[in-house]
Length: 136
Image 1 (tube, rainbow, N blue to C red):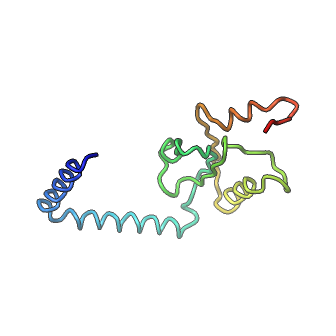
Image 2 (image 1 turned 60 degrees about the vertical axis):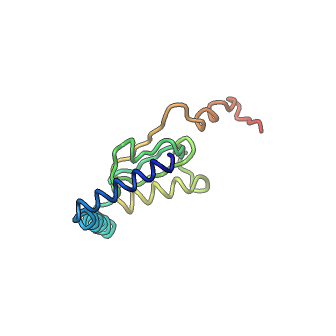
Image 3 (image 1 turned 30 degrees about the vertical axis):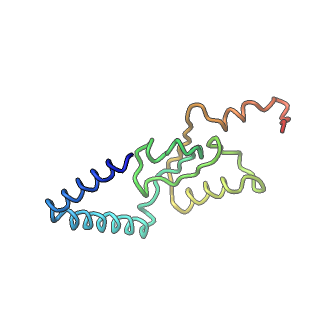
């Protein structure tokens, strides 16, 4: 964006603010309202996270956006290739701890595992030979 475009945008915003004197207070009030709602939801654990979502850590795929979740609607676990390994007390404790916390403490009843096309993590996993050997 060129400096002329920035100047035009600033001028247009300045004009809007001068013509709509109450715009700033309306926006500020809305921000206060949303903040209060989020604080109330955070203070009441019964209103938190009805979903546990496992998703890929790929930054191009945002689970909240794809699933249209609002803040407080989903407890997210993101890792490479949205993996949920088998339960083992000694391995993969991060994923197991996230599941345990979500189910026992947040009382999550819905668990969703989502993926996306062209996932590099899945491609890497599928390239491992059947005998389990890996090349570096």
